[in-house]
Length: 435
Image 1 (cartoon, helix red, strand yellow):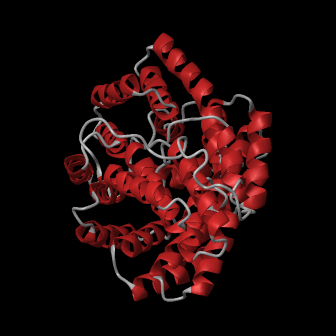
Image 2 (tube, one colour):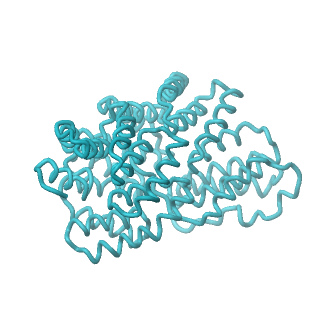
Image 3 (tube, one colour):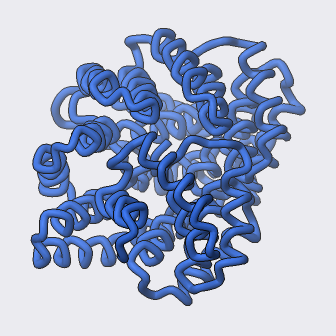
């Protein structure tokens, strides 16, 4: 329900990601292993660290066995989740490249590849890989998870619902309940989303604390959308109990502090996170908070950090939406924002891509086109205040004050502090003041 946060890294990731598309059998699989195999982890070991140790041992003892590389890929993917270090997914892809080279049709590698392609926002390819895996083993519920995720990101919601239903029918567990929860939330059923995510959290085992923590973050986010700020924050605290220092939970706790009106509390969380490891997301959050607090110099310094860090994120993740939203919110670089938004809409029709296009069109003064895109973004009845805020501002621009006010009131009713800066714009608009 929020943007996935990963550490930025070089565009060379894309070359690694495409390397496994046409594997070539043959070669010395013991060569160049040093760059792929993990090093010993300092400090307490997480489950992913232990998986990496086991995978390394397997590869070193049986370098021509594709299973070892599959284990290594899965371990790197888990470590990327735990550490929010996107670069580790490149190593996972390299491991799968070696696995496919040894056994081009091995099923476990194909399953992993479908999931990994989705992390790179290569949704069409991920969908194709998931469908191939599903055709090989239609009883494996894991394949339906990848199918659901790809279909959601492409905006194919009816098919996504079918895939998620099949998944939960085959095995009701954390993964399937989480997909059901998100689809319910997308369709405006926040109460149903909370119920399903509670089941997901309850079924998450202690052997994977990151997964349990992730579930509690998602549950808290759903509760925030019901206006249950204190209850949501307790879920974020539970996430931090399960997985201390978890970046997703810290960001969520900062959002809860904002929803409670505690700007200084949110600022302190983001500041600590940014000092520990600078990221585009924390830089932008700090920029907005400093701007709201009237500390213009600090705000500009952090906005400059965001503008320096985010392009690498966008290239690595194959996702320009965050950068487009930043430009559109501030009315800057609008020609490029609109170009990128249109390009993204050509390949995807999910509600958030439609909303990004709508907001870029609005800021360029193309209000009729903006409304058409916004209507697409609202087509599921999703209770997301940002979608409603954009729709409201577009309606006002078209002279429909009644509809505009309705959308803005709904946005603020869900969360009167849905955005540090934009919520204040919504309030001023409803009060009949400019800006």
